[in-house]
Picture 1 (cartoon, rainbow, N blue to C red):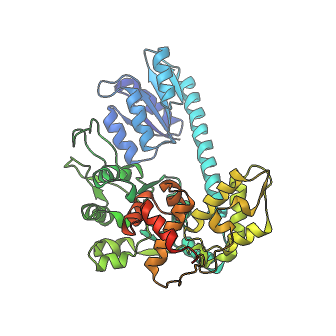
Picture 2: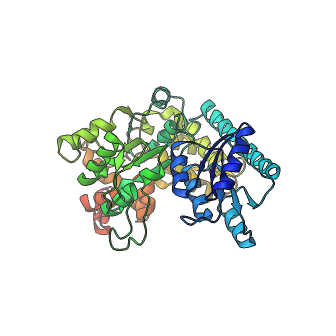
Picture 3: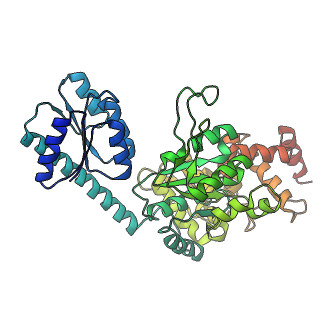
Length: 460
């Protein structure tokens, strides 16, 4: 086993180290907690044997620090003053066992071997899970059309690298599923994939979330906070809606991508991180670059490998598979769906893509009587069967080819269908509420505006 021993008692530390090495184990020892933490950052240890009472840092705090660095490392506590309270606290923090000094070496060795076997079992389980995911790492991505097959092959080629990935596609197409599939097939799969949505936070909050902050960096910063780059160290950071980043944050993100360094808000100290970036957006970033809204150097840095999930309307043959997939997910027991309801779902245009389909199937399983979904359980826009292959209901006024006018009409219809609920409307459209508010403001879709639109579309 690879063992780290941290104890400020030089005689005891030297004695344990020598005897463990004679048993054939690899041992590194440190007299101070900070020295041991530095060793743990440079080398992975199976077991840490640490003293509970040390002047620089108590063992319970040291336990937490070591677990942050390597969660799978099993920690055994050493103390000369055993109490129930300290034992309970140590076990709560994740200690494997608790040994009172003086402890016979044979007994200590037995406990360390037991901890090592437990660690090995956990590692084997993790490897088995990773192997199962490698067999079917993209099981959440449902589809058999050519567009999906091409995307899956691209994921397989992209995943083993450390290069940044840019996922481009409409809202609701499954960009986060693609990111998870890339992460699970990478050598970083045993480390976390951390996700953040740039459109959901204000600029100041987003900077603190990404890069962390020091205590006192701003009003309300009562303690030091790790940023998501630090949390994802060794793993993957998925930055959704990257096109919403403000210019200052674009510059900070570029620096991390270029040299792997960052500074917390309010700090002058540089930190090194090893993080793979996967970014996603439904915006046309090239157009944003041309318009000066997005940095060209950042765009080229994150656009090394691009993956584009196809919209649902371009993979209609996958809709029956997705319907059955969501019925299994949301339905408890065996579910059936009427033929006319299935046809209506297959013929609908799906502007909100797979997310909208998921939302509607979940809604139908709640509203349906028994375990059978009928066309009356579907939203009116789908259930009345008036969605044609273009995805827009026929109107008695002249249909327009203007894309903005089509978007305005569709958003207004979904708002009306969802009885003005901003949350349900955003979910159905596959966008966040912030984006929906922009559309409502852009097209003046107030209650009066919706009433005017309904009047305009009435049959003469």
